[in-house]
Image 1 (tube, rainbow, N blue to C red):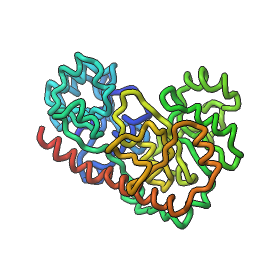
Image 2 (image 1 turned 90 degrees about the horizontal axis):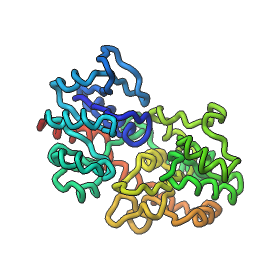
Image 3 (image 1 turned 60 degrees about the horizontal axis):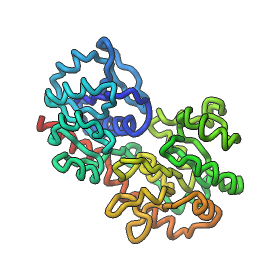
Image 4 (image 1 turned 60 degrees about the vertical axis):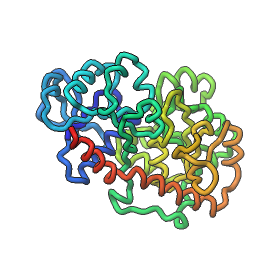
Length: 341
């Protein structure tokens, strides 16, 4: 199977999706290769990060591929090639509704060639195939299993942020909260930054922030290209913060949520991410996270003390949600789906 990564992005959801699908397919003994586009075809493999090798292939050779082809991501720079590949029978993963905002592209895409990773995406493309995005957990990959009673309350950090610092992430909540929290309860900020955002929005108002490139190496966000980097960071904290509210996003679970759940870390998320009949639940029998409407409520929570029975309950439900994204099971679904081509 050929996974075509048609994007210039080096980190984010597209990269993480491709990473976990690649490793899931490998675990299923699938002959899988990740391909990126360049001006000439290379025979040697390069390193995409996250223990994923890839090969550069020119457009002409990509259009002549004979194996099953799955486009795992497609940005505006690769739109014409994507259309050509779809005309030749390739399948494509559509991650959220923003990818369909181009009317011309949407009119060309046959929903029967589309795989969506969130149930809410079926509202936009009812005839598409829904397969949850894969996640290769520590338990599946290494046999490592988190024990709630063993180390949760004694972790090194109270809370950690692994989400990007960006315009749609409500990152200013972190800085507002940290100004009001005692040092031992502050959020450790380790998210990869959009430097334009931190330069124009964060530094003028929060001069105490040091941009990623100027921090000591062991405090930078280099974990974004390490397969277990974000999980290993979360294992040091009781809570993981991600206050994203992405306009037009499809809801469901962010990869930051899954990485935190894998580490036995409780997700603290934005109240607007909680939607009826969706994956993230902040109350009741299926509660798997805690949500907040503003940074003031976040401060009150972090300043307090959670009941251990509640934290155990949330982590147990989070593990159940994590299992729904089991990369081995989902990789087999992709094998069946691509086998139809």
